[in-house]
Image (cartoon, rainbow, N blue to C red):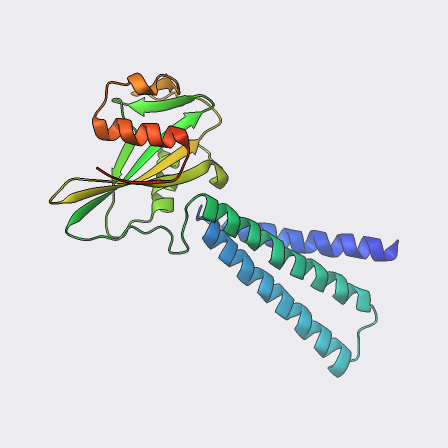
Length: 226
């Protein structure tokens, strides 16, 4: 029973440290969160190894060796599982360790094309998604976070999915990074109109907008040149 209580105590203590550390991380990019959690895990393992060596071979004060084993086991388990889950999630959602920074060049303009969805309804403004022009200092995850705050929307990172890009134009190209974001409630903000997913084929919009909307509704990866 003593071992069990000690194990629960150590696990809860490490869990609190990990929870506080993750609450400080502001990025919604799962891969960056995974990398930070990997660094935290390695740091905890290093602390465990140093404490074990110092207490056992230098200070001779290791009266409860199982405490070190529990601490080390929990640290290793955390380091192997949490970053792996976040990296897999980031890969599925199309995120990059480079924080999805858009490459800014003079021969093309970079945009983000964002559509919010609640269940079977998507929300469009003027028959199109939200289009945001990017600059050379822009990161996609930060732009989405800022937009969510502006619209007063709370969204889990696993509900934010980048499905592809659309390139349009001949001389100076326009490149659109296309996102579909699932929200928990209707987007009841002036100017946004809900459309059933089966109605999107009848939307009276531009060809570019209709192509992006239809592709996002398919929820498959795409890279289109118009």
